[in-house]
Length: 295
Image 1: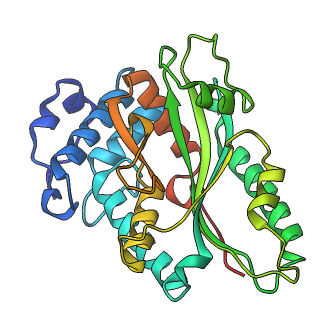
Image 2: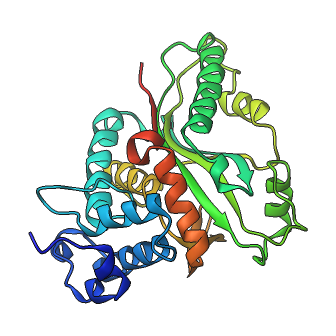
């Protein structure tokens, strides 16, 4: 283990010249992940009087094999958690037919004050989902099951959004005339679709009736050009990606236009990045954001 990082070392930037000890253990795009770690710490340390932010920065910088920080924006801890999470998802759904599984996305709410995104809000949204699925379960022949995680995306005040996205987000609290950044709290899950006593019962329709905003709910089939385990692995790691870049959905090159993919562009500004990192921490990190229903 190297010498412990201090705020003084962060302040004079010397700590960033140190080689990251986990470079060979964090999978693909290691250099990019290391740059993100540096960027996270810099965003948290713009104001050294913010004790919570600087304490989080120090935990990330002092992460070691013997004392892991277990922070979503630490590349080593995130990579390890993604792989464990993927194994868990494959264990639970690896034997389930692909036509019974979907990647479920629910857009929950837009917030201009990032402090509003915290563990209490996650608990409320989780309870809302439980109530909905308890009602749907009454009509199902077997158990509704899913494994997912909440995620926070940031939208800059000057970001140009499509008319469709403006329409979707406006129902969730977005103000197209506001000039400040906002934060979209949403949810992704691998979901098992059970059979129902009434074969005409449509679970996707029922979920959309509850979350009834335009394009608020999305169901995506597994990709046909990947194996079952590859699909589950990719969905699991996607749910725990914790990116700090602006994103947009673009059409795929698939002939059937069945899929869309997410394209990432510029990094969040330091202030936006800090808001997202601290919101994730307030929500409880990995354990606070991961949500499951497997009964």
